[in-house]
Length: 175
Image (cartoon, rainbow, N blue to C red):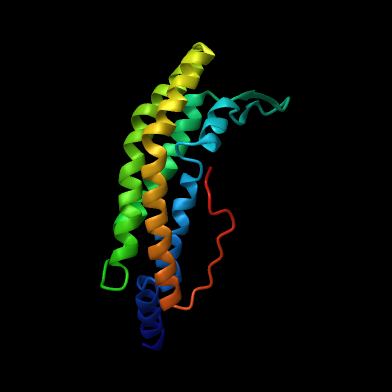
């Protein structure tokens, strides 16, 4: 009987999301958007990571840009789903709403413009065409991204202060 009671306490304890976990999921999870509509994302596509092609010889090859983008998109979508699953209350609603707004803004751009950009790279398109689309993405989305990101950071800092969570901005500008 004592064992069953301990198990119930353990399960009940696991279901409660701590303030630190809320902060990590809603705010810190958005760090994977670093560089959106700017040079950092352009660099990820311009110089993709290598992947292992032969385990015996250790041979590698650059990833296709579509693979790079799909990996990024999967991570962003998973983080978005995590934030969507968070329970909202008066204390968390501003932070969660700001996080969701940021994800809802970037996901269509990853699915559309960034997929188009990845396809241009993978097809060997002219550098001028690639540069033009990169410029369009930056001009069209960077300012709004920065605004949404700033709103999330402000809501996150306020939440963190209320819960005595120590935060430090290491690189406040994702440019």
